[in-house]
Amino acid sequence: MNIHKVINNNVLSAFDDKNREVVIMGRGIGFKAKAGDVIDENKIEKVFYIESSSLSKQFQEMIADMPLEHMEISTDIIAYAKRTYEMKLNQSIYVALTDHINFAIERYRNGIQLPNALLNEIKEFYRREYAVGEYALQILQERLGVKFASDEAGFIALHFVNAQYDLSADDTYAITSIIQKSLQMISEEFGTPINEDSMYYERFITHLKFFARRVYRKEQWRDDETELADVIESKYPKEYACSQKIAAFISEKHGVNVSREEIMYLAIHIRRIFKKDNEDDCENTNKKEDK
Image (tube, rainbow, N blue to C red):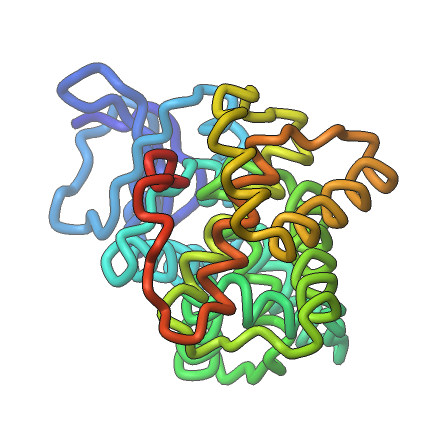
């Protein structure tokens, strides 16, 4: 490959054999180089292809004055998330996380560490993403000697939440708030905390994440299962009534009318959480899973 543009001493851009612009990283790969030169393949450490041309341009502009170590740490964290948890991430993660890591290090060296008001919720609702945040803190300490509080692991985790669900930071905070309030209302209604060790807890949290996202984006399921909803309301009146209260809160707080089908599936998940013997007596209603 030939150099298209030298971004800095350690980063340049080129066009691959498919005529796609790629960003190439390697220590000293751009030193004294110029456009048109043949790239020294022995110096190539990482190659990035970002499909969106505007995102690629933004990435290149951002990393132009950034230390190589910061870029390497960011890309290694992303690779860890993909490898360990098989996360499917929007390519915006390369811009968002790299910028965040760089600025967080700058903040740290200026003696500034920010509190994370949602840390407990992030730990509970986004466990895989928080584990990635903890890994990030580990390699930041190992490679750069910077030691962040766990709040920073939470901030990093949210970038992975956003990149998986194609959300903005504001979206994520709003959706997390809906999840938190829903769990609080369920616990109050049943007079007991939700058992996090239940085999259905993780599944329930996943359902709430997608439910909250649909609510926030005003993407409701249509009421195609009215007869089945009647059955669930009759068979599990307490769970259904609890779901209706959550729907009423959402309508008042977010101006969204929750469909009866959404209420029904929420009631089914609540039933599973509190059913002592954990038998799945609603198996026939399981045709719509959140994926």
